[in-house]
Length: 437
Image 1 (cartoon, one colour):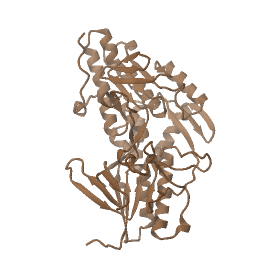
Image 2 (tube, rainbow, N blue to C red; image 1 turned 60 degrees about the horizontal axis):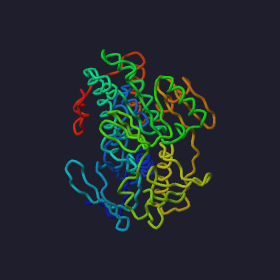
Image 3 (cartoon, rainbow, N blue to C red; image 1 turned 60 degrees about the vertical axis):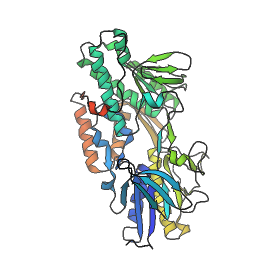
Image 4 (cartoon, rainbow, N blue to C red; image 1 turned 90 degrees about the vertical axis):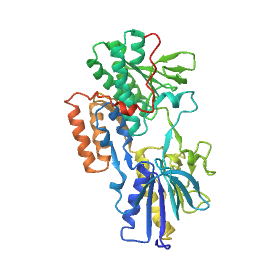
């Protein structure tokens, strides 16, 4: 029978923020049996999202960019469940298991909301149905198989117009994520076309569409301009100040009436809040939760929010901290300490979250990148080496670091894998065969 005097800490979300909070609490209460720590996530792994684009391009083996959550947790309990409802007054979280549909009610004394975000389609017609997101491991694998399928079909196609449509790849969103995906995709398709005798080089095109006046708004204007010129030189096309009106099975429609004929629209145009978070009365109009400097939720003692689902005030700028991995990791550690202070009933041990962004790095494919580290800006091969070194260092687990290092080393000398895994395309229809073919 469970000890009713135990303090129950429930963490929702197995991303960078949630896992860091769990590991911090494990260390603090390593010798305590009266604190129960439970981590809930719909997946039993943490995905290192910064490397998903390299899974698409076959530079890294898919399993090497995910880390089993159970392997990371030494003392905490892990439950693979999806959150269905939150009752902050009764302190109950309603969950269910995806495959069995069995429901569970989890009670808590202290709650940490770190559920992250989902792909945001911004009510664009057809975007969710016909575009490819890149948010998790399954997305990367499905997209990779689809791209190879386009080459296989193009090699059989006699009509040059249809073949060109099959070999046009549109990336919607020119931010950090969109450019990273587009650059890796451009390298992959440029390499792959050599194996298809009936595919002509000028038929393969990667197009980036963005409503802004420049790419990578997270970077300085100079570095963004460098990246734009470099990627254009490699054959990529950019349509800036261009808004998408809709997505169909064979096109990306532009608001001015134009359209890009393609069977591959990759959606990298932002995120949206988790529906269960957005439905809370404490969420703002954008579906995020405002918290104080300790990441506490107002009017609900014992509840903290962090990561993508929270608005955490930056005392220096007055704006919320950006939802990046480097912030999420530090937020998780700080919340862990603040929750421990609440459990011990020692408010004087609470500390506000204060963090200054260390820098930004954006890989541009083909052994190049741009970097802004504490105001020092540089680009090219050295920036690419720094990107790899920093992100390899951030990758949890020595086994994953070794596996990814080997993948990168082999990728320099061995050809990319163009095996199409058709079973990954179940549940998603390939584009219908054109009438003209």
